[in-house]
Image (tube, rainbow, N blue to C red; front, side, top):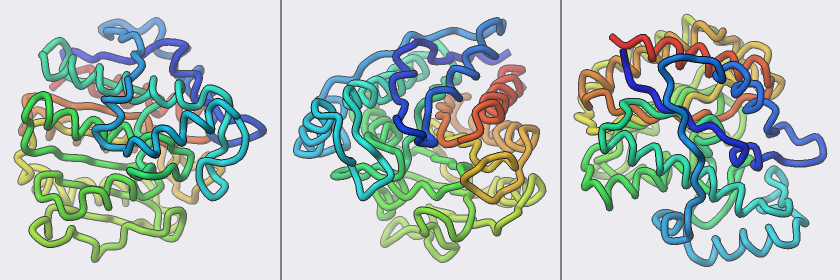
Length: 310
């Protein structure tokens, strides 16, 4: 049976936008209710990242800008998707710090797999917020793995309905970060085309699979299964899975038709790959999902599947 650590604590509920915004903490609350009584889970207390950790990816100027906006609580951090609110810096720092804490637990062998439900903020860039994402905890984790643990190869798999542009374009020319991104075609951020396979020396280390409106579990599984050899070829020392559940058929913001069983099955393949190539080191991040109960069930089913072990 696999050792699974799940981030659990009220600090992760702080990242919740006001005034009817779709990114709310209700989905994490619903997940906490499901996971609370689960056996064989190690609950991990959230941790706030300091600026030195956040600076592994983000610029000092941008971090200061987020702090200023956090104090005023007014306006937007981007062009209109990501509103400021009082305390948004602290809320974002908890997401980054908790993801990094799970990295430490995985790399030290205290857990095999770690899950942060409020993480996977894959749209944020080094200098800017975007698409509900303030700090890119995925990119911070990649840089932390390199700096602290001298990790050379990383495999990043993203099944969120939206393309993980903040990760893809930050590492497009990096041959040591392998990326498989399965997403819906033609929606925000209007990127992640089939021909985008990496740049320069990294050409061939990236795969984008855009799916058409209405794509279901069968098409999701085909996208994952047809790239098993690609994932194996990464030789990664750790696998990061962004397990966004906004591809579920109930989700109000997208047009995919996944079920919770489909998401769990896709995640279980990535889980198996992690055991094949990286001794089971697997970091899972919640990502998107805007139908709270469905998202919570999707995450819960995925964790139930992988916690059974191999």
